[in-house]
Length: 222
Image (cartoon, rainbow, N blue to C red; front, side, top):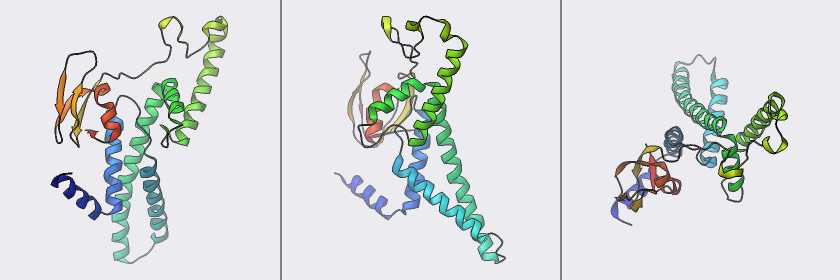
């Protein structure tokens, strides 16, 4: 650990929890909007943020109607900060729901595979939405045209013949990534391209090449 790492730890420890949560929520929001595929649900951060939003809403409701000018000014500041949190949360969730609507079967398979880990891919509400949405789509497709096909051709997740019916996101899409730690040599699959990623570097690279580093926290999307 070098002096920069020690200074970074001191800075983090001295930063209030609410400020760190806002910074983490902003990073999650940026990453979710940039990444081609859905990222892991930040459960702990979202729990703290949503609880803080709930408390702030209750405070605003309790203090509304107070004629004290100091209280009114404080409420304006609280409401402004509250709206910033609510915007980030709404935009973050919309970005995730858009991906769920676009690649439901692929994300469902990924979520089921992540259930054995401490942090599943989707939140319980997202998983409920995905299963309900997919059930409605399957019922609609079956009533519209699938029921007229042979039984062997009615599956929406068929992979026979070497062709998968499950749509996947473009894992080779280019993304901007910043290195938070020295990563070392990175190899882009399918090419002879190799490069060194060091702390502070910013690269434009295929998502598939840096997905693991982003997941481990060594890199962040920008």
